[in-house]
Length: 107
Length: 120
Image (cartoon, rainbow over all chains, first blue to last red; front, side, top):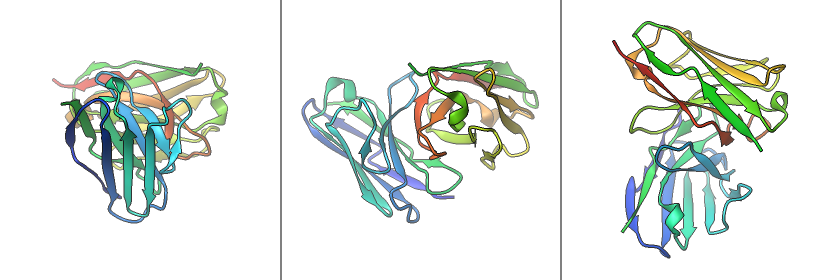
């Protein structure tokens, strides 16, 4: 199985900050990497697919990058509604696997 | 508007069975692969099973192989998850989710989730 490791596991940030979350795969996965946002008690929502493609309706302050084994999710100008947990997912091979999540909290 | 509505969760004893349903609307159900994913309390997301739009191919996580079965009725726009021989570590919120397209494994719409608790 491909292991997905996110860092940090949590972070504190202020409104307006630029936030970077990283995700590392245990083997090369090309660009088969997605990012989800999840708020407490809610289902996950797809933010980014294929490493860098913005899902329809997602604000442009979210961006994704990387390929191979190392990936990033960047939030440029954190907004109050962005405080949530972010998880990466690889779709290169079965079983599909997720990172452990990064909780973005208010500083 | 895409909607996915799960039902069937609840409390079940270890070794017991449960069947979850997911009623879909707002898209051409038979054209999309669907999946079941779960999230144990306080933990991360786990993919469990998925199947193609026609239902001819299914994919399982090793942790549920031989115990769980995924199926769909495209005439009813409904996805099912039959869970047998349930264990305590199956306790989780179970989500049904719509594949982005092409059986990509990216899920662009999720249901609200249904809690399954396995406990005596």
